[in-house]
Length: 148
Image (cartoon, rainbow, N blue to C red):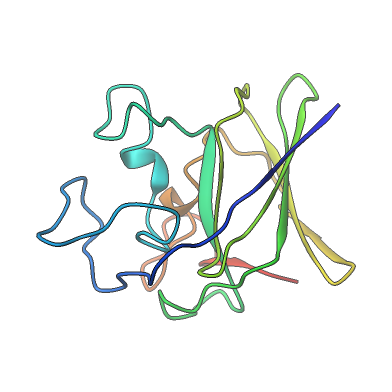
């Protein structure tokens, strides 16, 4: 069975916020916060946003080296967990996506836009996408998650 979550943006994205677990003075929380950051840094058991834990979370961009505020809305992100459970989410206006559905790692992922699909070539042990998909200092991926 496919679970579906659609995420909607509210407000503008604070793009100059450092990627830390600490909220900055005046920083707003919500669907548009911190595009390009590792959502699971806080949205996990024991994290600062433990009351709203995510199983997966990230931001989709036009290119692997896009600016942090260059997220793309309307992209479908599909995740299949180790038990075959599938979850589909749609990026919001700043490109952010997440799910609170319980999932079991490792995950297989793919993104789809306008009928074009791109699958991640390997499975991942974490739902914190920006842990690897970062820019300008990519960790182990080639950069940001790119919409096809």
